[in-house]
Every structure is written in C-alpha cells, then in structure tokens.
Amino acid sequence: MSSAAHPLSVPSPRRGRRRDRIAVVGYGYWGSKHVRVLSSTPGVDVVIVDGGPARLAEAAAHYPTAKRAASLDEVLDTVDAVVIATPPATHAALALRALEAGKHVLVEKPMATSVEDAELLVKTAARQGARLMVGHTFEYNAAVWKLRDLVRSGELGKILYVDTARLSLGRYQSDVNVIWDLAPHDISIVSFILDEVPSCTTVWAHSHISRQHADVAYLRFDFPVSQTRAYVHVSWLTPKKVRQMTVVGQHKMAVYDDLSDNERIRIYDIGVDVEEIDAATQAHALPVTYRTGDIVSPYVPFQEPLLVQDQHFLECVRAGAVPATPGERGLEIVRVLAATDELSGVAGLDVVAGAAASTGRTTPEGSGHVGRR
Ligand SMILES: NC(=O)c1ccc[n+]([C@@H]2O[C@H](COP(=O)([O-])OP(=O)(O)OC[C@H]3O[C@@H](n4cnc5c(N)ncnc54)[C@H](O)[C@@H]3O)[C@@H](O)[C@H]2O)c1
Image 1 (cartoon, helix red, strand yellow):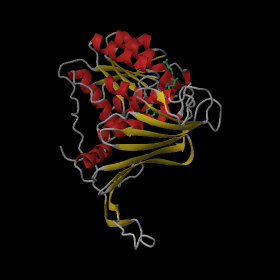
Image 2 (cartoon, protein in one colour):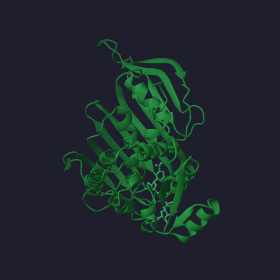
Image 3 (cartoon, helix red, strand yellow):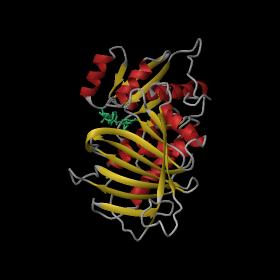
Image 4 (cartoon, protein in one colour):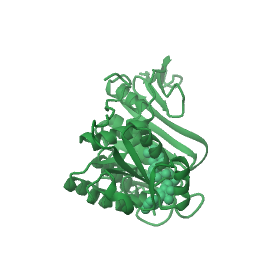
C-alpha cells in the first residue's frame, strides 16, 4: 500500500441486478451529506427518512425524484440497507429495528449511548447475518492513514504523547455532552494510529452555558501497550475552529491539521534530548539539548472520507465485504466513552475524575459527573 492510499476497494454495481435501495434516516446536518454522496453513486436509489416535515420538504427541494418517508417503518420492507444519521440517543432503537428486519446497517458515531445497547446491536447483527458498520469517518481519511504509516514505520520514534483539539462554536446537542459528540472522532483516530484501544482515562468537563450537558472537556487516555498517552480537548464553546492532532515522537513530531487545504500533515524533524550534566556545571546548563531540522509536508491525496466510507458500506452490502469499522469497533469506542461517565458517577458538572476505565475504579483524585444525560 502506498503511504496515504486507502486500501478499500470501490464498489461496482452488479450487472443485471436491480439498483440498491438505501434508506438514510435523518436528513439533518450530517444525514444530508450521506444523501449527497449516496445519490451520486451509480446503481443506488436513496430513500430519505426524517420525522421532521420541514426537513422532508428541504429534501424534496434538493432530491425531487427520491422517495421520502416520515418514519423508517414506512419503507423498511422496500430497502436493502439503512444508514442511521439521527441524534445518538435514537441510534440503538432504529438500528435494532433495521437489523431485526435483516437489513445491513451503517450507524453514525457514537454507535449507541450505552454499552448494553451497543452489545445488543453487535449480537443482533451476528444473529441476523447482517452487516453492521459504524460511521467512524476519520478511519476512512487519507491523512489519518498517513499519520498511522508514520507511527508504524517508526519514523517518528517512540511516541511520547498525542495531543488533540476539536474545538469550535459547535452544534450543542440535546441528548449527549461534548465528549459523546466529538471525542468519538479523537478516540477512534488515536486508537487507529496506535492500533490499541485506550484503557484508562482522566476527565475534566464543565457545562458553561446550561446546566444540562458539559460543553468543554479535557480527557486523558492511556495506551499501555504503546506506553503512551493521548490528551484530548473537545469544545462546543470556542471562537476559532480547530481540528488538530499532534503526535510527538522521540525522533520527529507530526501535526495533522484537518482544516488545511494542502498541508494536512506536517512532519517536524525536531526534538529534545536529555543532557548529561556534571555537578560543576549543573547550575548554569540547560537540562536538555534541542535538535532542529526540516519541516516536510508529504502529499496526501484527497478523497472525501464520507464518500470512501459510504462506498465501502455499499461494498459490504453488495459483495458481503466485512466492514473496516464493524459494530465491534463501534462497541469498543462506546466502552471508552462509557468509562468517561463511569469516572464521574455523582451529580455536578464541574468535574475532575481519574480512574482505571477497565475496572471502573475511581482513584483518590476524585470523581464527578460529566453530564451525558
Ligand atoms: N461522522 C461524522 O463526521 C459526523 C459529523 C456530524 C454528525 N455526525 C453524527 O450524525 C448524527 C446526526 O447528527 P446531525 O448533526 O446531522 O443531527 P441533526 O439534528 O442535524 O439531524 C438529525 C435529524 O434526524 C431527524 N430524526 C430524529 N429522530 C428521527 C427518527 N426517529 N426518525 C427519523 N428522523 C429522525 C431529525 O428530524 C433531524 O433532521 C449524530 O449521530 C452525529 O454524531 C457524524
């Protein structure tokens, strides 16, 4: 595989076969993008489902020939597969309904809002022989693949830590806090590039606008096998939009800026080494020496990640391919998100909490509530 090339194949419509019918449930901000990319894919008929009359009217204006419905039940019998892009708290019930009808399902992140619901979806898909895929869009992003290659090839050296920021004046959600809304992306990217699911977290979260859901959070994830950490900052309440990930290695550092047009990955040949200092010079010498070198921005071909993801889902529907982000992957990330809730446990939105996520034990650092519901 070339460094930034995506290994997933593009689906081909089956000759002599009728067109595939895909229902997209939820024609909101993100669901409308699924409708756009699926409508432009050969051999696909999109059925648009939304419970909101105004949303359906807008869908009719943009896609006058597409079939539309106010509920999934109205069209479930007529489709081959279902894409669910509704608010997170509705994912499990809708996905379960579709899987029980034997349909292949792509669910947006987070796959569900509880571990129990996510497990039920995975079990139901297995029982029904249906494909269950989660919309971890960044795992279909060529820049993320490039970052993973840099880590795995050893070019950066041992990874000392990863820092991520996903900030903006964001879309406040009514059913989940900022962690469940935005951090699935960062957790999925970091665990994808390190090939490891984090086992421990520390959480600070606060609701600045309402008493309902935390809108700013700082999290720490530990990766015991890689012996490294990720520090994740997510916010709906910041003036400047930031989508940045910094991977700090012992040899080099890499910055992934998802908002950059042509330099999404920059590799800095830069570092800090510990200086051996004898007692006589200790008082005056710096304890480290600095290395500086070139800054390189490798070419990363751009293909819309949502298009890559949805075409892969079609390949799973048409040819029975196993999803690159299967339900089990969605469950892994839901477990990590649930651990951020477990850390808290008690009411109150101003939180500093630390715990071993795998055991749910709270450390002496304290505990608090991160306000998912
Ligand atoms: N993968 C990504 O990069 C990405 C980006 C943004 C959002 N998302 C995810 O997409 C999902 C939707 O987010 P959004 O920002 O588009 O939300 P939104 O509020 O803009 O849209 C949700 C739509 O779902 C409809 N809806 C709600 N319940 C329904 C039901 N039971 N049946 C039919 N329609 C129903 C609403 O009327 C609304 O139009 C969320 O899970 C979110 O986390 C993913």
